[in-house]
Image 1 (tube, rainbow, N blue to C red):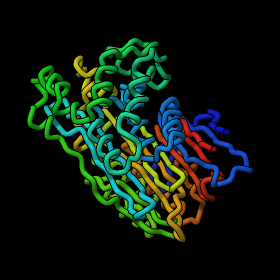
Image 2 (tube, one colour):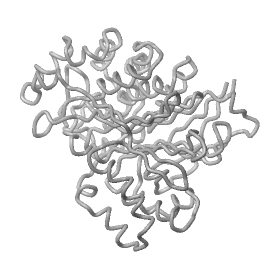
Image 3 (cartoon, helix red, strand yellow):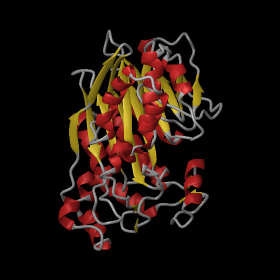
Image 4 (cartoon, rainbow, N blue to C red):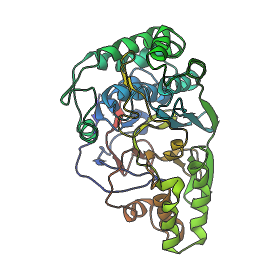
Length: 410
């Protein structure tokens, strides 16, 4: 049994992929040419490397991409509470190989008060699992529960976030989250519903009565919609069906075909809709051997969200993300002659749209390769992303670049 894991070689300042994906800490993945596609179990990727390993474990236990993504979302809530905690909201895209459809799951932290959003991650993870998962719910929650029980060393990214907000409740070297252990145990045993309508949910509502309305909290719901598709010579791209930026993406991509004015394209990023907010995110990506793809971005808004900590639940409440959902992106690109996934990535960034249009220009107008287009769109800003590139099939990823990506082989 072999595992091919990435070596963190360098930082690349950039990027976008298949339409727009911006990335911070990249690692190059090199795989043995003898690997056969039939031997590949799948790929997992996440902002946190430990989280990517959790996704691998789930795929090896006969879980599919949805199971792996749910397990990673919940695990990353433990190891990266500054961006991806249980209070976060997000957007996922799912490519279902059986139907060939790509769906958008939106689970944003809807406004509960002027400064706090309703925790959305448990409901979003549950909805993803209920629709596409094949393992039992307790099996996909368990890795997060077990991680919370341990004393985990604070990651470099979490340390960076703690420097930005030094007043968090967490120790700056070791994560100790006893209350979160209890929360995850409740969710593992009773389902995500207990987080909203059970004793746990009632305790959280009571603790934050100034912010959380019982009716709105218990009635929180997610939304499933068809992703937005756009065709070009490169293939077909799918983008989240979010109110503004997601729906603007296909038009911007097409617009770049007929406009060569660089200044006009760059000005797109100055639009208030895209440039107003300074927000932080975390991502997960899972691909299984059947061809199912799941790509998610989540955020608390700013670092540690609203800075309001739930002592009953063991997590930070988010800033309201109702408007910020427009910044939550994923991109899935398929080849024109088949439904094979070529590129998949996630990102959250207030310059993502502008950078995506630059890539469109390079590919559609100048005929450059996607890789060259990505390099040309680089800037001095570091971005977070999870990314897989499989232009030649599962067994031959000629360029696989990501923060924490694992190719899993039998």
